[in-house]
Amino acid sequence: MVEMMNVEKYYDNGLKALEHVAVQIDQGEFVYLVGSSGAGKSTLAKLLYREEEATNGHIEVGHFNVTKMHPRQIPMLRRFVGVVYQDFKLLPRLTIYENIAYAMEVIGKRPREIKRRVSEVLELVNLSSKAKMFPNEISGGEQQRVAIARAIVNTPGILIADEPTGNLDPETSMEIMNLLETINHQGTTVIMATHNNHIVNSRPHRVIQIENGMIVRDQERGAYAYDN
Image (tube, rainbow, N blue to C red; front, side, top):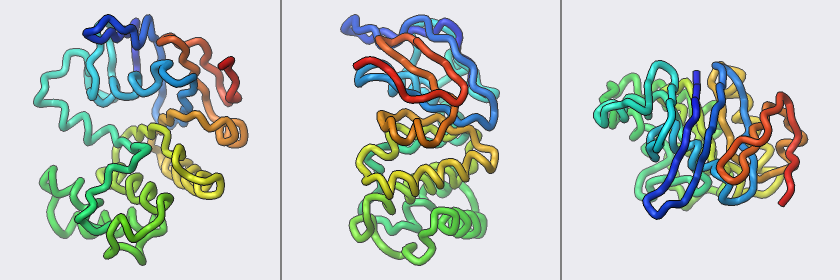
């Protein structure tokens, strides 16, 4: 599903973001990416959906060779990899329904299919009753659930969640975790970057720890533990 071999990422200013990263993630896994701020978690995630491009190494995501990908193939990759951001990135002038439907409209799905699928994911995230509301009319936790619904509406093979509980209270964070685990149980690979030690320790899954751009720990059902 995901394979990274000797991956390095250097920015133009010489900053080393990742060095000698080698990791494999199988279909259906739930993986936490942990590490201190600036360790390279977000950079690693961005390489998987070609938001950033590796300096060296080899990356495969599903059937995509990401490191040799032509730019015109990137939209196809991003249908396969759904992304959830900490700051939601919802369109403020669109309703909840329209925000989710937009992800299908831009790839040319038919109106009947859009209506069916958006209704399905709204039910999954428990927001059917708020479909006609706007983002500023719902809570932060509900906005994050809309962002998750938008990310999965095209049935991606992989869901990348970058600090999805970072701005949420503990109770709402657990609701988001319940949702992510439900999506994972339905067969979607989930890769979640997080600083939330309580979530990692109470909801154990595979843990990949990154420090100074290198993987220092890869542990099945690991705990959140590193030195600040």
